Structure formats: structure tokens, C-alpha cells
Amino acid sequence: MAAYVIADIEVTDPEAYEGYKRAVATTIAAYGGRYLARGGHTDVVEGTWQPRRLVVIQFPSLTRAREWYASVSYAPLLSLRLRSAATNLVIIDGI
Image (cartoon, rainbow, N blue to C red; front, side, top):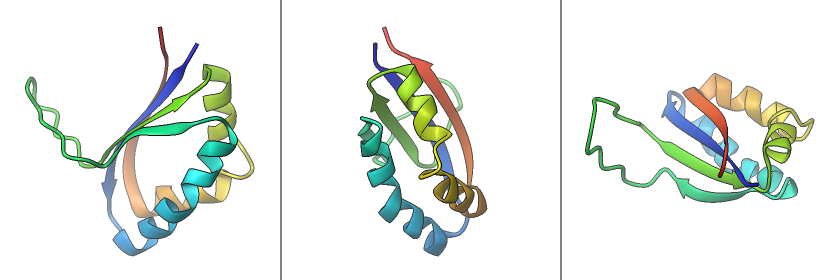
């Protein structure tokens, strides 16, 4: 069953974040992940949530999504993202 990583990202250091964006897709693909949305326009139709940069990534399973997030290959990029952006991130099981 598919799983999804959903992140709301507020970039605080655009130059450093560009390095993250250039390198992260390879790590996602290595775990069977693919982008469904990556920073496009959001249209808030209910509530007060104002996402800054919304990203949705699909993985083949919750296990693979968690493996990617905890992987050695993603660790330096995670560190870079934490330094260059404020993020709310969840991993959710699909149906």
C-alpha cells in the first residue's frame, strides 16, 4: 500500500536550500519514491493554513518512506534542509 510524505516548507536560506533541491530527488528515487507535488501554487479553500512550499511524495509503502527518511544517503540532506528551512513533515499510510 502506498504511503505519502507531506511537507510544508518555509525556506529561510534560499541559496542553501537550492543545494538540497538539486540532490534530494536521487535519494527519493532510490527508495521507490516520486514527487506528486513540489512547491506549486496552493489554493486554500477552507481554514487558515497558509502553506509556504507544499511537497507531496509517494512511496510504495510506509516502510520504504521511513527507510528513506532514516537513510544514510538522506542524512546529510536532511541536515541541510533543517539548516535552510522550517518544516512541518508527516508520513501517512495510503488507502
